[in-house]
Length: 73
Image 1 (spheres, rainbow, N blue to C red):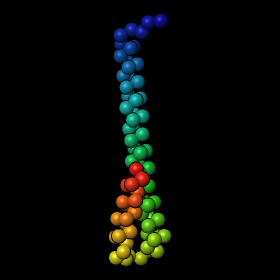
Image 2: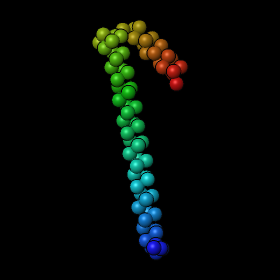
Image 3: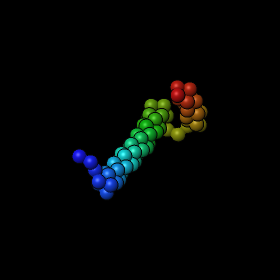
Image 4: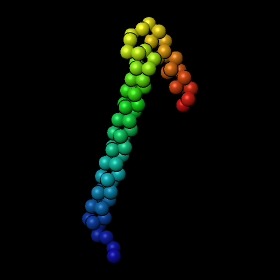
């Protein structure tokens, strides 16, 4: 069974739309996951390291942890 030109264009258009929609969903999920990761990292630093207190050494902790995490890439 051969597709007519209009049927082919319609199918192609729907497939392109499906691929684009899926790409957007993946991007949205990735951004959401990264946001949650950063929140969890910040929350762990706040609760476990700083014990909900603001401290001068807190800035050093964040810089140190950042450097260590970057080395793990």
